[in-house]
Each structure stands twice: as C-alpha cells, then as structure tokens.
Image 1: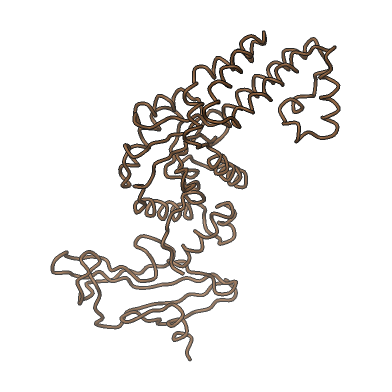
Image 2: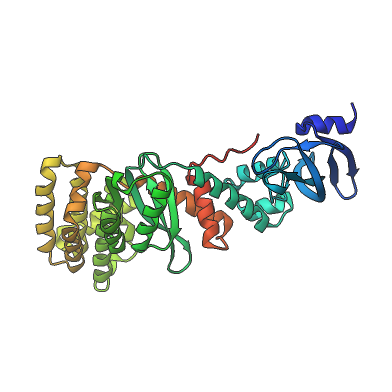
Amino acid sequence: MKDTELFQLAMGLIPPWQVLQCAFDKEQGRLDITIDFVRGGAFLCPECNRAGCKAYDTEGRTWRHLNFFQYETYLHARVPRVRCETCGVKVVNVPWARPGSGFTLLFEALIMALAGQMPVRALARIVKEHDTRLWRVLEHYVTAARDKANFSAVEQVGVDETASRRGHNYVSLFVDLERSQVVFACAGKDAATLAAFKQDLVAHGGAAEAVREVCCDMSPAFIRGTEEQFPQASLTFDKFHVLKIINAAVDEVRRQEQASRPELKKTRYVWLKNPEHLTERQVAILERLSMKKLRLKTVRAYHLRLVFQEFWDQAKEAAGVFLRRWYSWAVRSRLPPMRAAAATIKRHWSGILRWFESRVSNGVLEGINSLVQAAKARARGYRTTKNLITMIYLIAGKLDFSLPT
C-alpha cells in the first residue's frame, strides 16, 4: 500500500477528496500531507447543501493536524469556491476542519480534551502553538455548545461569586442545584448579574417563572436582584454563609479580647473548629482557656457558636423557637460582635428558616468554586475574565461539545 493510500484511509477521505502526496522532513520534525480533489469533482453548496456544484476557483490553505508519532503534521489543500444557482459563489467546507480554523477537527478535539486538565499555556508549549490560538478554539466550542444548551428544566438556582483576580474582581456563578451544572457565569457581583442570568435563561429555553428556589449568601445585591428578577422564587440563605457570619463574630471577639488577654494569641483556629476536629494540642488549649475562673469573653462567644450549629438539626416545627431563643441569648451576651451577628440573623430571618422547607444549600457551588480556583492556581491566573468564564463552562458547564473521535 502506498503512503498516500494509507493516509487516505486513516483520514477517512472520500471522493472527490484524495491524498495527493506526503513529504516527511526529519530535520524539521514535520510531515506535510497534500490533499486535492479530482479534476471535475462536484461539491455540496455550503449554504443550501445543493449537490453537483462545480469548482469556480481555488485558494491554498494549511491546517495543523495531530502529530504523526513525535512529528508535527500539516495538511495542505486547494479549497474550491463553487457557483451555486441559488446562493451564488461560496467557499466549500472541507470535511477535516471547520470553516475559518487553522486546525483540523481532530486536533481541536485534542485541545478540548486536555484544556480541562492542564493550563492552556502549558498545553500551548506541548503542542507548540500560541496560547491565543488555543483560546479561540475553546471559546468557539464553548459558545457553540451553550447555544445548543437547553435550560428549560432549571428550577433551583444557587448563586455565588468567585474571585477572578487579585483585588475586587469577581465572577458570579449561577448553578442548577439539581444537576450540579453551571448554567451561567458573568463578570461582577451586583444586582445586574441577576438580570443578565434571567436574560440568558430565557434565551436557552428556560422560564424565569419556573425558578422556584434561589439560594445565595446575604449579599444585598443578590437579594435585590432576586426579588426584582425572580419575584415568585423563594429565597434561601446558604447555611454555610450564615455560619461564616457567626465564625467571623467569634473571631472578632477573640481579637478584641487578646489585647488585654495575651493567652488568646495564636488560638484563632481553636475557636473556629468544631471540637471533634481539634488536635490534641488544641483540645488542651481549649480546656485550659475554658476554665471558669478565667471568665473569657471568647469562651462565651464560642459557646454561642456551638449552640447555633445545633439549629440545623432541629425539626422544622421547632426551628423558629430555637432561633428566637438563640437570638435572645446573643443580644443579651454583652458581646458587640455577637450582637451584630444576631442582628444580621434577624434581618434575614425568613430566608434562614426557609432552609427547613427547601433543604437547598450552595455546597455544590462551593465544590465548583474549588475546581475553578484550582484551575486558576494551576494557570497562575487568566489573562482576561472572558478566558476564566470560558474555563468555568469547560470544567463545570456539563456541555455537549459534539467533538469528533
């Protein structure tokens, strides 16, 4: 079998396309395969698929293909323009590459498979291409896959922000909590992001009226945006963010008190961990500092935190009574940070109690956020927010890219 016949079979080319010749250069480390069409060959019109269109003229083009062993491989072909009686003169679509791309379909499939597992810049070094060209491939397939996505089944939405770079730069994530799928991501973390999400949801077959649960933190912007864009949805405040407020208050009590009580220095995580997660050394410190004779304010704040955590274990009918008792205890604690935390709980009372009806949280979203931050750390950040959003869809969008195999 001739080398041209071998590559013809390997590439799955059918008439009128055929491999004309192959040139291997060991010194340059590359294989060049020239493809041509038979004289008088007819093509489909790329617009209306009309058969029997003859070549009008041609233009030479080159595509990067999968490596042949360790050698770079390039395809070269004359791409014809055809004259269609209906559409006029059009450039033919070649079967091995998408229009406008400098890579073959199989090479792009390789890029898509590896980009979710390693930094794009590192991938660019491996395949010896500029990373900007690879980002264009990723953006094309992500955009095409999202255009086909259907979000008509979205009913429970989790909202959270993730840092896009140092400083106050954020990307808001909107996740279908039932399917653990990022359905939308955009720059910013204000109320306008909810409007953008609503618009995108409707554009993908979803309905704002179908969203019955929204879970988010206590951000005023997210609350206002939800009330404006999804007035029919019930708002549940994520329990992990509620606990974060209590933890922050305990830590503030400790920091204020350690100015006069040096024994509290370097004990931050003793008060922020649950007892079962403490090390032996931390248990000993906790026992020593919890002695009644020391009368530490931090100990009282710590007990308030431990009791509040029992809130999530209450029966639905008892949750409101439990929360009222805890609130009363906190406001009478004479600990300003704990009183401020209690006031925050009071302002968001119904959304906190809503958890006992919806049972939704942003735990899934926190896991996705961890994947995003891990990818960002591997890449040492992304050049643009657009690139970060593309990567978010790639690793957490559960999109169907319809890639060739």
